[in-house]
Image (cartoon, rainbow, N blue to C red; front, top):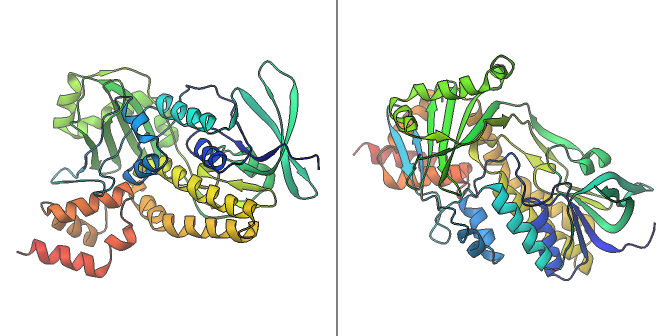
Length: 403
């Protein structure tokens, strides 16, 4: 292997890659961050930074930069089930609100923070190949749009390159807990559609939609339908998108005075866990773990992975713990934290009516502010579904509703 110029090369500079690179550079490591995009640039996204992700931005000293973009805070999560609505606060006293910034804004902020930490950032850089020597990842080969091909070497290459990760394709990690695509989601931006700080969810049979505020006085409106309708509905996505709102007279009325400001875009994604490390490589964000977007956890998950992965690599580089031991703990902590939400998300993404006992529970939650706040925290990721749906907690909610 050629002498490693860098300690770490991070492939992908969005919500998982830039924070990973930034945190490592802040600890004194030599880091190269590459992305085929130039920033600011947009990407498909749930947009939402849930309260645990907002807490990460605060720890990193970046929250003030986000609030300075005039992205409005989300103070309430609401769930309109047609016959009743559950509305609660999504966060904790330490991190009470969520934000849903445009990715044009957020990703540029994160890339800038990485560069300020001392990361060498190469935008408009296409990775052609992940270099492997005797079963060890040793670097990358790639090129800028207007330049020749170059090779760079590092002790570790981190794949933060998303669902179709080239790093993951190269190393072929073990993949487990897989789920097929469950939901098709499509969104656009609307003006003159105020939500008053709500991330509002509307749930109907085999349909769901949400509306929440983002930058530039715009509201993002996303619609979902079952994946089995993907082919049939693809011929007229806009028509099916707009028809969904007819399921609520009140929302349809609000939309009449609003204006759609962009085309409708969307996708469907599978669920999976991938082993996030091996000889000379690691995975963060969607490259290592992905679930349906209906619970809007992707950005917050990416921030958590960046923290965990950067900490583990620091331990390995500093000799505190062997690489395999430190990175195995990263994997364990990631999986233990996200598995309950992964399963909960899959149930929600089916868009099937909840079983009768859950419908009864939802009815008991409605009107009980303490329970509604807890339900909102479950859906924001601030509280584990495993904690909320315990027999003891469910019993307390039913007991309260009986009085």
